[in-house]
Image (cartoon, rainbow, N blue to C red; front, side, top):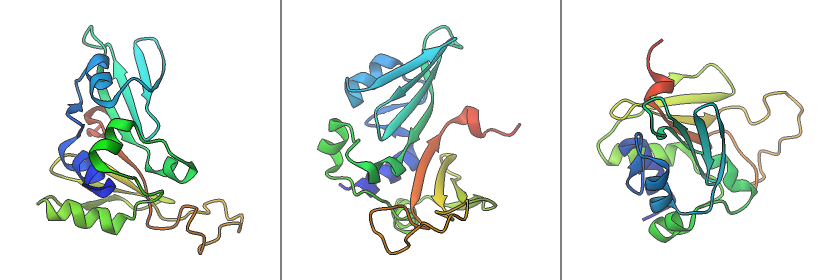
Length: 173
């Protein structure tokens, strides 16, 4: 399996190694490991595993996950993949191309459709899971002119920035 298989799995199945929306802190630790940073207060906890970032709420009395983010953009800055993910999926590339991820998602029978193409980050939706894919459209949104389009070590247009899973964040308002 590959890093693209991991991203496609998250985008289509909305879980990481079996833990997903509604799973508690202990379930996530059992699946993804003990190497994380928790930041929280007022009934909310953000758990940061590097590549994977989770949001928990105690709205139902127990802390349960209500949001999963896969922060692909962090990989260009160095290793941040939890060991259980590396064991399952192998080495993760520093960047992921949207068209390659889209192809893997289509190959498992799901679709990808535009959700919001108006900014420097374009948002796409996987209707079958309601996952969102955030894709870099403009790597130099402030027009500084210091972006080297030929440098493979930095973000480029068409790179996946992140994946976002959260029924609470994306439901109609």
